[in-house]
Length: 139
Image 1 (cartoon, rainbow, N blue to C red):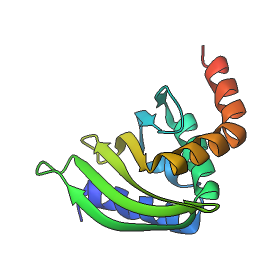
Image 2 (image 1 turned 90 degrees about the vertical axis):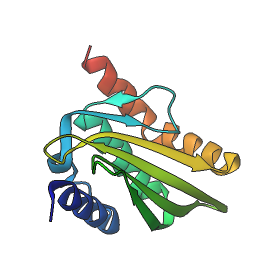
Image 3 (image 1 turned 45 degrees about the vertical axis):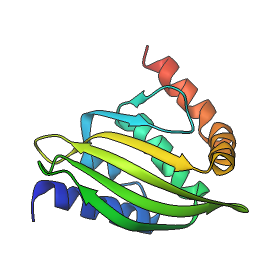
Image 4 (image 1 turned 120 degrees about the horizontal axis):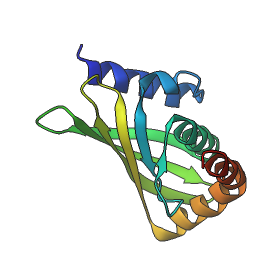
């Protein structure tokens, strides 16, 4: 099994367990998270763990359906569905990996708009204050 496959195997285990304890072990120190719930990208492991850990508690009935991999093996896209309250959504997690197979970038896209708005509102309530504090302390 190659390095990226091992990282994705760990990612799936983290999501299935709803426990982000192992997440830092598969993140590059230079990781950047681009979330549809927040305007700016968030750099660093701490912000990524905070956001992913919160999303895991927000999404209900989360399921991955398909995976797509780039020819060079350095990128992957995982298609998923979930629910937030009465809003069903579809989305993709887009990953880029470094040479060690660690996650260098995660970009998340979600549709439809009403589910994305529900996600944004909930994420702002649950993770927003902690993210602001984290960003303020890193300056």
